[in-house]
Length: 209
Image 1: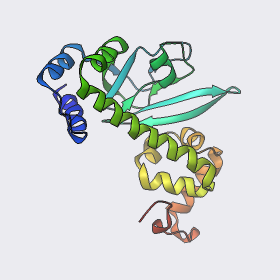
Image 2 (image 1 turned 45 degrees about the vertical axis):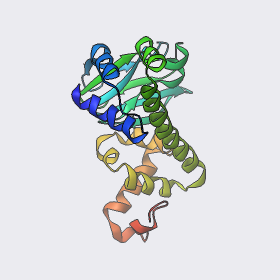
Image 3 (image 1 turned 135 degrees about the vertical axis):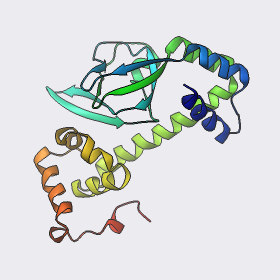
């Protein structure tokens, strides 16, 4: 837990508001932990997301169903924050499935305690704002890339920014995340494994300086 508290305090410090001793004491009192085995579900469609989670170890994916097919929404690993956004903030049943791709350990705060922290400690509002901005940017970039980049460019962008996903996440899930067929992704992976089949340099990846 102290590792998580250090992380949250570092986020607060970056916004100019270190966590107070009272806030840290409250967090120690309300933060709980849970574990998931590989393929175990943290949340299923129709359930209310009652907690916000912080991943200590492991890897999770979120997906929803569309026309009887899984649509991958995101993948998050250690030191990431995970939540079903609409369900958590509205406290209503959601459409998301959250599943462990590896054995995972998570810390979590209930919605009620999360709301209390916001209402009680201004510095925790800073934490919430910074983390919200971070993930808003992540999702904005991904949504823009789906529309702006070619399928191959999307794969190169993922290689540049989240290379571990290529080895840690099943091909069909990565393909769904990149909005392409699994066979298409497999061919692209082959082009990278065999550089002679690709003329694209890593320095040409969109967004790389």
